[in-house]
Image (cartoon, rainbow, N blue to C red; front, side, top):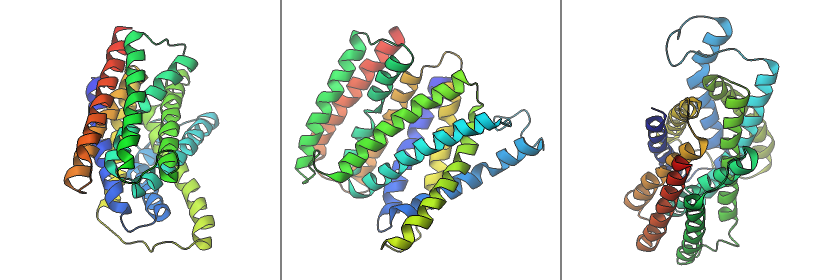
Amino acid sequence: MWVGAAFLSALLLGLYDVAKKRSLHGNAVIPVLLLNTLFSTILFLPVILDAEFALGWFDGTSFASTRGSVVDHALVACKAAITLSSWLCGYYAIKHLPLTIVGPVNATRPVVVLIGAMLLFGERLNLWQWGGVLLTIVSLYLLSRAGRMESINFSRNRHVWALFAAMLLGAVSGLYDKYIISRHALDPLFVQSWFGVYQLVMMSIIALVVLPRTEHTPLRWVWTIPLISIFVSCADFFYYHAIDAPGSMIAVVSMIRRSSVVVTFLCGALLFGEKNLRAKALDLLLIIIGMALLAIGSVSS
């Protein structure tokens, strides 16, 4: 059951990246991200009201949530800060880089999650997993060579650095999710609904400080802007249910979610007319094989 939820999350994550790319075309990052946090908060506002005031709207459904203590809210606020940092970096990267570059780099996130799980949760890598890690490193090197064909220097391009920062922070967020849900027994829906609220507060402060001091492109409304919030909220809903399921493994869930790269790659080719697809497709294939090796190693360990 949790595997199916993880695959649904992966599909929605791919559509989420496509909606971001389309929405950021001709738009500044901060206004679009502010709207994203606003719409995400509105989507889960009924869940918060139902839990806080015991209204009984969602009793007996998957949308029934719980109230949290001050400590619980502090943990979720920390989660919001990590995720918002990842989103800020990721939005800047996806605005300026091809999806056929962004997707494969993001697909390497399970490697970081696996290493983090090894360091934090005492997990150990077997030969399958080490093979997946090494193959992923090779594929990133080859991807950097493909990027040079489009004048994208991986070592000097600040948007590539932002992309790697987003990937690393996203991996930290995934490990933190497993920590607060498994170790602190937080309700996944409580985490998802309230971290949106804290993100909105943080993003509003950033917008108030940054926007008046910088020149930015005026916001141009496009229909994909609310789709960002819808896709990411649904993707996270299935993700939290996957990692909360008995017997689920964060490393495997993270790997499955990265199969979203197939959606972003195809859309980058078909909808945005991106270039050098043959070289990037080979890199993508190596990354997928690496993810498969990681999955085999994780299931057999």
